[in-house]
Image 1 (cartoon, rainbow, N blue to C red):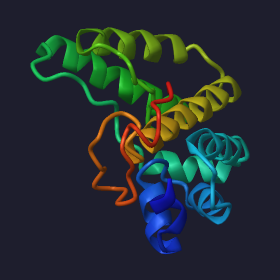
Image 2 (cartoon, one colour):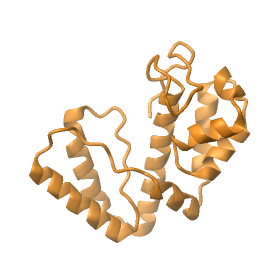
Image 3 (tube, rainbow, N blue to C red):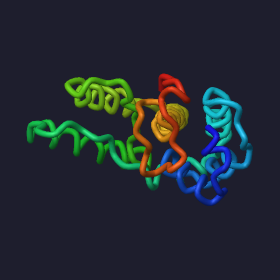
Image 4 (cartoon, one colour):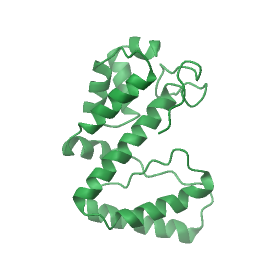
Length: 172
């Protein structure tokens, strides 16, 4: 936490943008440093995410990649997923996002397909709420990993990573 708290503001904002591609969120989280511990940082990150408006969410979603899928998925599954992504984007106007933290590799494809099918039935306002929550979960998990909470490796995106002894893992 010490390195995160003392890193130059521009460096911190760039690293935070790797967690959630919202400049407003990154500025807000960086501006409230220092944080006494990881739970305080995560609470501030959650609060900043809850306060994102429609334009902020659209900005974050514009840069969000599609969920990573395991190698070697069948062509039929890949085709079905591509069609589902296209239908989702046509209906809601943005990329489908889902937090898959903790999902076993063999469960990823089924979780993504089930979620996209289910969420395609949402109306735009319901989906906006679900999407914002998924982005918050993604940011939280990325932030924990960037600070080293998921292991002893420092993140290339966040040079201020700590070790797992410094920052206990928090579920995302």
